[in-house]
Image (cartoon, rainbow, N blue to C red; front, side, top):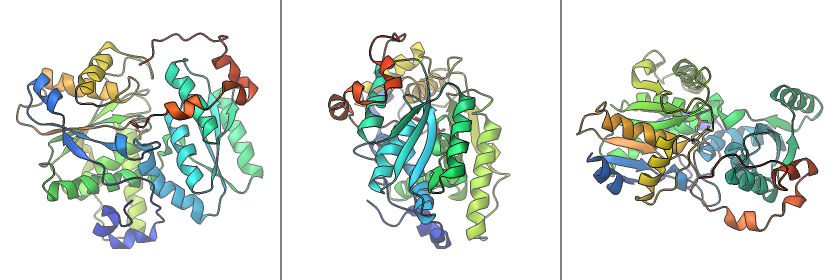
Length: 364
Ligand SMILES: Cc1ncc(COP(=O)(O)O)c(C=O)c1O
């Protein structure tokens, strides 16, 4: 694991911001040979954040390098966070928090049941999360507030860890890709396609690419409610992350007004509702499979379907260098799933396994 990150190499004064090592970096970047052939587009590349950690990788652990450091600095012991029962964020938090002696408490609401959701639930338990099933988002908020009032060792991590601190993980990711360009591993990309869910991944990349003065534009494919994962909200978060950086190093240029030109956020591939499968996402999953990539239909499948459509619709010219940011963990959870019995979960969760609730969707 690297101990000096590209962001600190560029701005040494930012070393005052607490940071801990969570991921294996730099994550690889390489051409998607089969996809490029299939689309008749020479330069489609993939940034392998799916390989960011051997137990649970993907985009979340980048954010934790800053968020966990803050938790440890504040001497907190418990993480309170939230999501739907199959939350990737919750699982990633649980897995990585353990290494730092932090216990994760997950406040969960129901979602459409799938095999993936079941597996994540079993893994939440396997990796030691305390699980609480909440009847509504309102009750979830209240329960977290109440817990924070009496538990002074608890720290709330926002949905998807998309705080300004979490965003710095992806500012650093942009600096990492800049080093890969400078090292001749990839030519400077024209466009990066990335998923927009809770915002920090896209916000951090946009800000980081601006600070390294890359020509690269970001196409964010929205997969959550457009009123939430909007361009405005993404830019607002990027501006907050920049303001945070500038409190530590005032020589960092105030580029907040420049960011707008670098970003498109497109919800055309969203399917109308968070988590619903689209046939285009399934097609993208199959194509990516030929490059030995494992995508899923909630996030990365939709994002790649957007990239494919931009090429087919000629919204991208033939010679452009395109990067697909693969943000879903590649790690195999099967060994942990096998070792966990659903009856070991709190009783309220048994209904997701014992046939009381039927699976409505074909799983990916
Ligand atoms: C696998 C995966 N990719 C991408 C995203 C989007 O990242 P962010 O929440 O930072 O917008 C998420 C979460 O929303 C995710 O779970």
